[in-house]
Length: 196
Image (cartoon, rainbow, N blue to C red; front, side, top):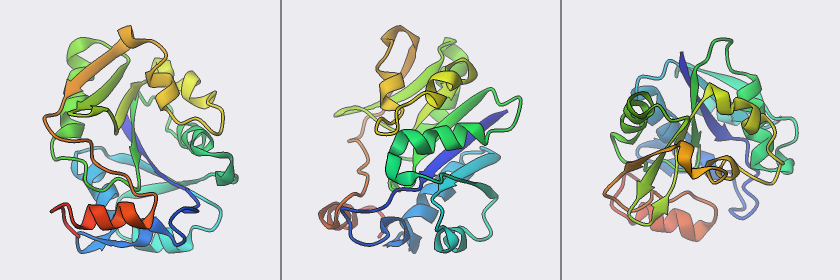
């Protein structure tokens, strides 16, 4: 079984308000990003949230997702990745890690990652956009121990960069989709022609 983890436990310090609940595409940033993952045919979607997650849960109401709580989101993205991996069902063969604040991932990226990891026999499938490697990233189960061992302040990029020979690189002829950290990022996203 292939699962997905949507990282949604960030504290939005640079934004000053909950960036995941900002309007985007007729819904919210987080719901749009999560619907993209669900729409790619991944049936087990774990959304990693912080301890105060009632508003986040409401924003995802009706979606076939389950929640994993990161009790210490202030420790950084690595702690959220670990919380998500610990919540995976036994027998999970691969996990897609997606960012809850990256709602504009181009259509087809997730399907291309799923195809690449099967066809090439690699343990990590990563998109290469016009401006470099990005997200989301698909990790096969042999890599799960490394994801559990991430320091809190390092995201899964540290695992991707560790050994290039195990990467299935999927070329995406588009700029890297932005993630939203600041009000300026959000304004750029809304002005980019994507839903907003």
